[in-house]
Amino acid sequence: MLFEQPQSRPPCVLHEDEHLLVVNKPAGWNTHAPSPYSGEGVYDWLKHREPRWASLAIIHRLDKETSGVLVFGKTPLANRSLTEQFAGREVKKKYLLLIDREPKQPQFTAKSKIVRVDERYASGAAGEAAETRFRVISSSTTETMIEAEPLTGRTHQIRVHAAENGFPILGDTLYGGSPWPRVCLHAAELSFRHPATNESVNFAASCDFGADARPALRAAIVESGATDAFRLIHGAIDGWPGWYMDRLGDYVLSQSQNELSPAQLKVLQQPLTPHASRVTSAYHKILNRQVRQTKAAEASLCLVIGEAAPERFTIRENGVKFELSFNEGYSVGLFLDQRDNRRRLLTGHIAAGFDLALEGGVSQVPNAASADGMGTRETRPSEGLQVLNCFAYTCGFSVCAALGGARTTSLDLSKKYLEWGKRNFTLNDLDPVQHDFIYGDTFDWLKRLAKKRRAFDVVLLDPPTFSQSKEGGVFRAEKDYGRLVAATLPVLKPGGVLFASTNAAEWKPEEFLAEVEQSIRGARRKIIQQHYVPQPPDFPVSRDEPAYLKTVWLRVA
Image (cartoon, rainbow, N blue to C red; front, top):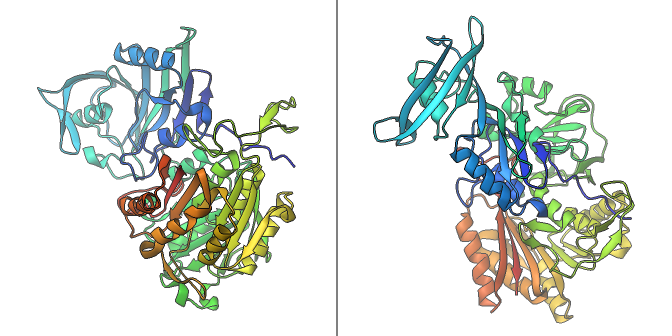
């Protein structure tokens, strides 16, 4: 079977051609990552998603809480042309903003010089010139919709001018606006000359400030026809500290350290999902930080809404099928926060300029299910690669690598999970007999494989934060990860790719990376490519909900 690769344009993309990529950025997502180890911005996420987006360039920015039209350049011609147009004030921008106060005039132009003052911006004599046109377009007894046209492009310009003229934007508490679930500012239209044709182009995106911004973020990244498993509520950043909720196919799974409150139960009755039509039931699980001490009965899920799910059911992720179960203890069979990393194995593309296979090492095969339906030839991204998946669990990584053309070896300490993994292979029309499944301790088998001179193109390490076996003894991620990497390197081919991951929340990313890199240097091997990624955008990161997942892809000489 030849697997049809996942769709190459996520829902947030409004337009793409040879020179431009235009997106509708949802509120709550940065234009770019604010720091190296925080969550990816829309730019970072897109740039590393597809090989043709590897040269993506930021031309302008929107604030994190501002939604709307955002254009990126794909070629030097586009970057140069758009930069000149923005600098020359040739680009026409129209924003919509919602206020709960009546402006003094139905139409006027605000002019000032804007300077930064701590975390805010304000008008000041030493600042840069800023000019914004405002026009009331609708009004009611409680709310007024205003169109804003910024003639310059200063940071927070519209927000500053609105606040200083007596009508701060609803939700913009930084500038005196009334509390609201989001900042009610939206980049509605963007018009400019196309870099290649010089013809005028216009891109627009509608907005409903009354709608919940959380499902809008998920709808921007989740391809509904290919994926029906993702996070719906991620704790404090989504307004629910300590509460997490996932869409799992036809079901919703709620998780917290307490029983559901009436308010949470009400949310469950109307799940926050952009594709909720098929959701039939909701379960709740009480989280326990002492997972190893949790009894099976305590780890079981409680049905709170609807009819009970079957013992096993199937979800889809990037077109791949996985079997899940609510009856197998603490985990349901798939960790959703690794979705983007599984996609990397599926497509063979890790990041801009970083493919799983070395250049020239990929085979070409005909694909009857090609994207254009014309029977063109597509690349099997991992054809011929040997992949070792340690701590394989239910073999999610292995299935994606195998669909990409790799021969996989899945290693785990649980026979039950390996059998589960084989069923995941079968679900996707993959023959488990063509792949290896090894039951046993990872450290012990790494020694055995090295002794047999087995070598792999890719080795995947995603160990639990704590585990224990007779052969390997106690493993603690923060204490023993370096030892694990060192044990792995003898079976990693020169030029092979090592994937290292941990969800040890208290372990700082810098310390995790230093441990991995030190182990590689200690083995007298050299890192020649590296790409770090945190959890995917449906697990957003904030000060109140910091990043916990740390993953890095390394090509090791």
